[in-house]
Amino acid sequence: MEASGEALAASRAALGDSIRFVQGTFERVSLGRTFDNIVLTHVLEHLDDPVGVLARVNREWLSESGRLFLVCPNANAASRQIAVRMGLITHNAAVTPAEQEHGHRITYSLHTLERDAKAAGLTVVHRSGIFFKALANFQWDRLLATDIISPEYLEGCYQLGHLYPDLCSSIFLVCEKGAR
Image (cartoon, rainbow, N blue to C red; front, side):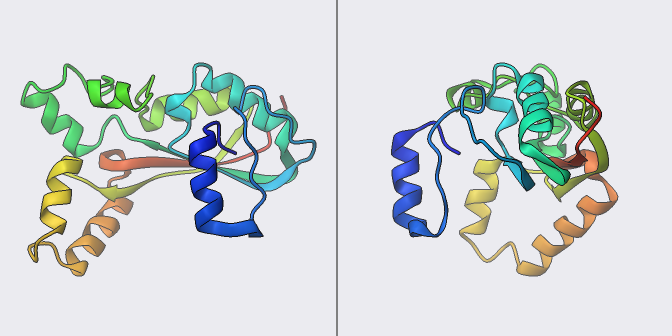
């Protein structure tokens, strides 16, 4: 599902006809069926009513045995906490000007993401983080263009994320259909 016609055309060009594409917004689209797996990756932070959309997923789109995989940027990522201490942002959950330009309306922590999933009636069955991240994206982009960062270092950051999910660049929940 994609709201942008331009992004949808690019996806169709890259992926072909093996995938069913739907143009529309989560708030308005009609899918007419349920799904066993729904993946929302870096979507929720862009929505005006994330709890309403999650409730719709729970009520209309998630099958009785289905799972929702929900991934968002993390307010408590080590890189954000460093930025707060440097005076670059006011607090961990601040929406930065660059994030606003990309349409972000909220920056989630594990606590607030789980709060919204539960408010929507979903049952959270697993929570974690993805990739320990102490540097800003622009710093990673520069480093990855060099030989300073090895695949082993990246794997180490990934593994460290399992120990410290609250410090990861992204957080995720696995949810099942709730009573709502």
